[in-house]
Length: 347
Picture 1 (tube, one colour):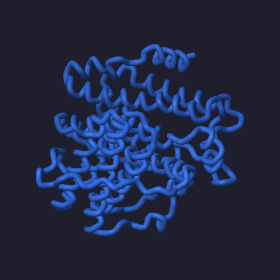
Picture 2: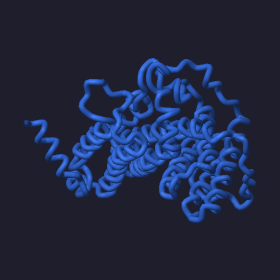
Picture 3: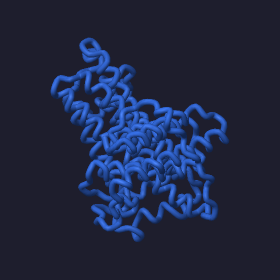
Picture 4: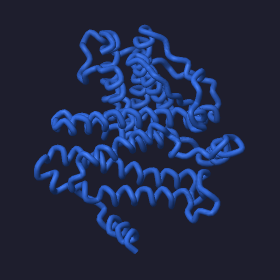
């Protein structure tokens, strides 16, 4: 816990984010988003009062991807980690006030932001004290061109995605550590937290992609490939995602049991693991459809010229491999794909 003011502001931010999904009308939703952004701003102020943010641009980028998406790595105190994470949430919420994201994805991204605010600050979930009224939501500033908003949104959405990746990796690692020590009860809530983040992965990517496809093709896509950058950007360069994938691999090394066997001895664990794996599969599926909406049947900028597939086909193969790996581990596994992949391996 980082102090009573941070704790109170984190709970307030969490409460407002939890209520976003209940606003169905566009006007009400926009007002709720402004309220959430204002609450996150107050949390940033409370954390900044303890120590200022690190100047990220002063740290060296460890990859072309980090440089492009304005992401850096460094040793941070709990307060600094919380501040920089909440800054990402705050920027994301400010952009969501204008981004045309669907209600379903907004709820998933807001849930991930809520969980991040709690995890980063160490605040316990719960209702705000009655003595803490909601802060006033300011009207949006005017003047920025749509093109600059779209370019910024591409970065902001990806930064939220990076935050979710790192938080999910930590949650999965925590759950795995508890399972290694035989404490299944302690692992369950961390698996649930990780599932919230993974469900937020495609929502954050869709947030980043709420720009016209024509603008993306004309103004953004070429900036992620030579000669604009040294090497083409791809998801494989995102260290946060690598950490998450490594954490998932470690989890399944500890609980590799087929679903039926795990459910027989630990039904709650089987359901919690299954929910996380299902979310991971859906993330892969939605990446396929999102790529199709943006680039159609074009090749990925990171693909080798001699490769046979386009971006969508390559992402679909990734989805199939993941679904095949998880088929026996979840209640409704894709056994058709699992059998097909197994057949290909033995042919």
